[in-house]
Length: 116
Image (spheres, rainbow, N blue to C red):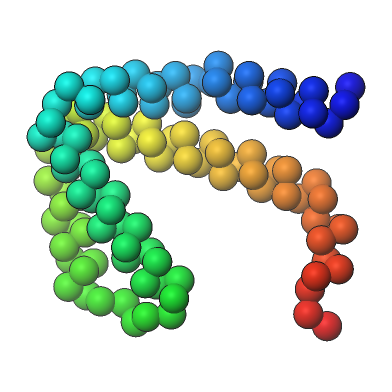
């Protein structure tokens, strides 16, 4: 079996996974709830902004952490927003695990790029 055939097989397995199907179902429900959709988009946008700042080396902003926590708490009170976020997190966890498995399989060859 070629590497490309295996990649296509993995793609099909991902599409058929419970995590992906649950995510799509939650996405479909949230698409019809403007309040929940806005809550999720605002939260994810702020969360990504915060994470980019942290990766750039900026010091942690307590006010932003508090704002994110308040947004998350509000989001959890909306069933559709909560279900979407939980499905989104499960899918992201699975995808992270898959990326790690793939990365680990070729890690030996990638050490060429490491600083000496």
